[in-house]
Image (cartoon, rainbow, N blue to C red):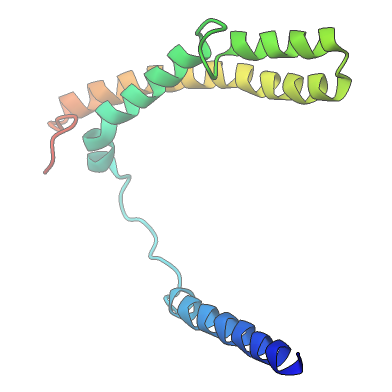
Length: 132
């Protein structure tokens, strides 16, 4: 038994050492240089996918109770927890609902900002979605 425990301890020690050795080069790389630009070309390139992702999120949040991730569905779950007398679950779901409701104005603001960015990209010759 003592031999098995010793072998297991040595194995664990060897594994920990190899994990530390593998992590050392990443830590030794040092800090990244300070950015010199604003990344406008990259933003213009990714703009269509960003717009699509934000639009899908807004549609999902605005969906009815049959849409997973919608505010209405979570409101229904809160009501169900309240009806069932599950106060702790209701509190947890209510906190999630508060956060989810706060996402909607943020995403709508982001949609408007992305429209302005699309206009900027077009006026500066940075075609949205094109790779350069």
